Amino acid sequence: MKPTDDTDRPLLNISGLRVALGGRSILNGIDLNVARGEFVGLIGSNGAGKTTLLKTILGDIAPLEGNIAVLGRKRPQTGVIGYVPQKIELDPDLPLLAKDFVALGLDGHRLGVSLRGKRFWNHVNEALAGVDAQEYADRPVGRLSGGQQQRIMIAAAIVANPALLLLDEPLANLDPANSADIVSLLDRIRTRNGIGIILSAHDINPLLGALDRVVYLAQGRTAVGRTDEVVNADVLSKLYRHPITVMRAQGRIVVLAAEGGEPGHHADGSDGSQLSAAPQEGGSHDGRL
Image 1: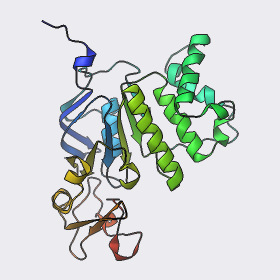
Image 2 (image 1 turned 60 degrees about the horizontal axis):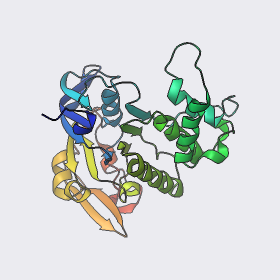
Image 3 (image 1 turned 135 degrees about the vertical axis):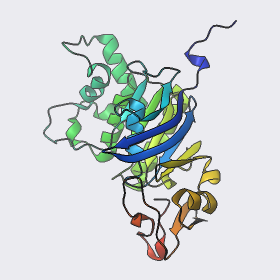
């Protein structure tokens, strides 16, 4: 009988996941599998439960029911999961160089004095090269642009060579050019390193060229599949329990909530008004549900 190792296991398996915060149900019966090297977009509005799901995978939130396993283990070893949190504000006068911020991804969790020898810094330099950030490695991290800081955060998350990378709204507050650069960078990383990626976002459009699958999250439930399987009127109307129209124009997906009627309640208890609060005339929402 062939011995089993980590290469034979699915990267991430989630089954029957239920999570509540403050007595309020946030996630209900979530099932999801992610393979090695797969790029998955986690799409949903504020309060839909995207951050909650990522933090539950990390082990920071205990579920009410269900199981999560990474490489077959319910408690993955340190370094198996890399995590890029929602954008944090860094003081411009923070006396921390970009390369030292990345180094924290290797030893920031350890107590006591860390021995940072040549091998250690080789790993840091490889991570910086992997995100095309060598040129500002010696600059204060707080004085980098938003796009540069995002690259440094990704480098810190991949420096320990994780199997799974979770990114919480990494495109928020980035302009379209920087968003496209970050998505392209992540696509190269997953191809080169075989890392599975789950990236949360409001807008699916910047991800369209890289995604293997979409996880649409609304009212604590998910629809999972390829973009065309999930982002269509039938699936989203059932998911939101409200009539939804999906249009495609000039390579972009535009999602419209029907006028009138009451959108279903989100997992955070809000009234779902984001569905019809459109940034453009006609109620279009560019995939931001």
